[in-house]
Length: 369
Image 1 (spheres, helix red, strand yellow):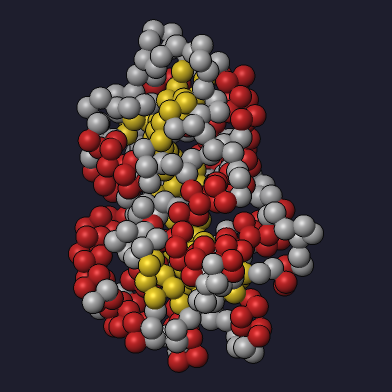
Image 2 (image 1 turned 90 degrees about the horizontal axis):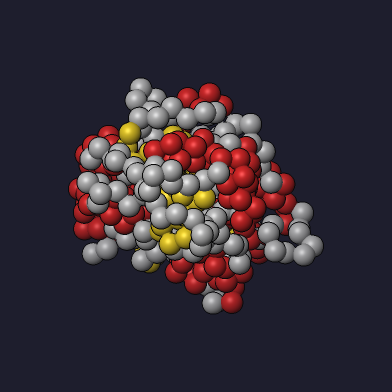
């Protein structure tokens, strides 16, 4: 949902689908009468996040009713920008909790000492493979999502062509000129897609794979908004823009988003878009208690709440991600139209931190020239 992979989908869908978003420096849960953050007996807790953070008013009010704390939301651009800003201001942190650092940026945040250890209530309901800092609990997994190639069902039906399902499929001649992806250097899903190819083909093979994709006339655009809403023929916006690419790098949650406002909603097999499930990269987002937080007690209470069923079950239709808490139920639109991703690629955060810049530089030199 930058390359945090922060998630162009979340930001775009908040606007496209009219989902409620929080104000940049206060949000739905802030109160004009609340004390400024940091005072003695302070009842305001400040959440620093990326621009795509969203939650229902009623959910944030429930947190206030349960704890007495009022949430103030401070948004800091995309996830990469937000993490960088948090690092720059770590001696005087902007808030109490940071939400939105994901597995592609996690090592950068941890190596810079942004967080104080805190073992959240409810962490036992989070699968172990999501707990990437289980030894020290500096961050808490909050949500997961998969970046995958999406396809336009109508195009492939009309052309009597099976849609691709794997990365290997995408370089076959029958899919030449059909794929649009995002720039790894400027886009969250673009970097994720590159990481998926690195996970699949390894350090010695991913560049050869991209040479094949380039020979197959992959189109590269700056970001998700342009790729999905202008170039992709399967999205509602893409149809209006006369997009002609039936394959796009997007999210496994894009199909549920496409049908959310359709009335009546179609049969799943007639949904406008599908997901190539063998092309995916797994993203996990975390929250952490900022070191030097002025209201650490409120911050701990907020992290507990972010992991609660109340927040976790609200989150899918706010930010189009899946809960980390395995007890939280997904909304029907996700279970009915979302893709089941049995195997999604990952790359160790330490390896990403060590190699990210050189990988992106090599990709740019190879693909953009």
